[in-house]
Image 1 (tube, helix red, strand yellow):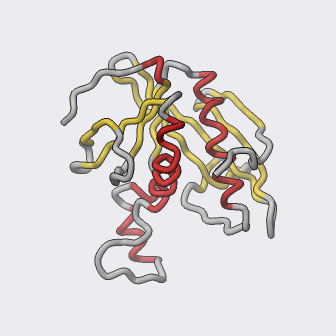
Image 2 (spheres, helix red, strand yellow):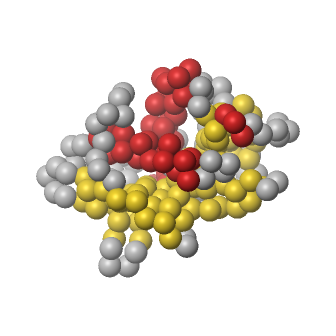
Image 3 (spheres, rainbow, N blue to C red):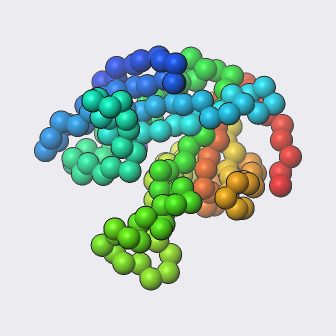
Length: 189
């Protein structure tokens, strides 16, 4: 997948983070936003979450679980990915966390109430979005590792995460990345 095909971005810095706006073009024009929010600070390193979704201008909210189905999924995904180097050019010593809105603990309960698939055991929609990011990372790991360092995280319970150096093709709930020049040391759990 090439990042050459991406939408034009409008960048905004604000108190609540860093945002990139663009229009998804297809059956309808949909305003989208990629948002980087500060989550917490650990050992002097700020951790930002990458959020993405349809933007509601009227109430300044992001519908991160929306599926537009506008026929431009690859171009939208490329656009989201194209913001990561820009983020690191502004926040070069920080850490970026990527996880899907469908990775939250309450997602499965909500999905089972409204989903048409009626999954018996495992929810097929759970962690679907992080799988998309991981699939891209796995296919491009060697090249991306030249610029970034990756940590994989899996949930142990509602609050704790087990972290390890990222292993391609292994399932994770979250992926953390930072520029190689800012190598971290941490203790694996």
